[in-house]
Length: 104
Image (cartoon, rainbow, N blue to C red; front, side, top):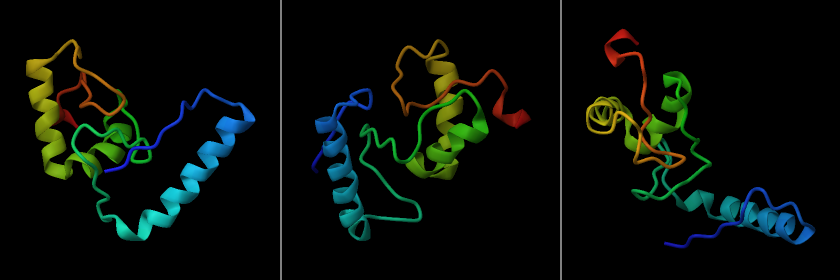
């Protein structure tokens, strides 16, 4: 596994050139990665899949691809019981919803 990254907040010409190179390199590799769904390594933050949200529809865009559809709903229910304050979080962590999934 190779992990290249740059801070999105950096807007220097060098940083922008690096980000452009990374995007072109990723596009070059795209034919060789899984698709439908695109998969990622566990705990690897792939922001191209999407980011977390407090809205189920928005979160499911990436969550169902990252965790595979049925697992995503199960994990939301588990997260609500085990970590209701969302202490364990990162940009693509399982979200907490105030509305029960049975109502969605």
